[in-house]
Length: 221
Ligand code: GTP
Ligand code: MG
Image (tube, rainbow, N blue to C red; front, side, top):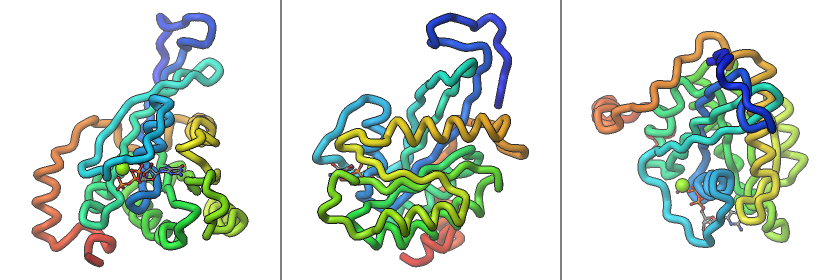
């Protein structure tokens, strides 16, 4: 994933000598704020009303870290159980993931382990996983203790931050922390699939329907 581009070497931090491209996927229950976090990160915007995501979709975003340009291909997935297969399928080849829960909804935190299991069954062991406790602006309605989530993340070697897509708290920071960890790990991990940029979702859905679902989360429906 890491390439040398001697011709690209502009000053003022806009472009760098090395370019890395990483596939990052957001997972988590419906309504936790995955799409809102992406919108905040990419466009600096927040909408009080956000339509539920149906098909996975990706956007790209570039950050500069020292002498390296990191290009993220960010996949936003649906948290609705009837579409969770697609999140699983889309996890293939991911170098990093943000598993999002809502600090005001304990159920979304209790489902984190299932998202992680699904992720780990489909990706390299070297994947960088970050846990994001979103909606931190609603601290007065908190149902998930910071310390509990942090302890879970530490036990499992995940990055952890509480974020708010509404106020922007820690949104840039969590993506930046992931970029740094990916670079520390080397080229994104041995055995990773190169980013293919396109998956035929229609065909994939048909095949998983034939098998009666592609993962435990789907079979629960
Ligand atoms: P699916 O696409 O169904 O999986 O949901 P999602 O995880 O993408 O959630 P989405 O971003 O659509 O947000 C759901 C609702 O939560 C919307 O009404 C958002 O405005 C709201 N929301 C998202 N992030 C925050 C946040 O940080 N704080 C507050 N107060 N509300 C938020
Ligand atoms: Mg969404």
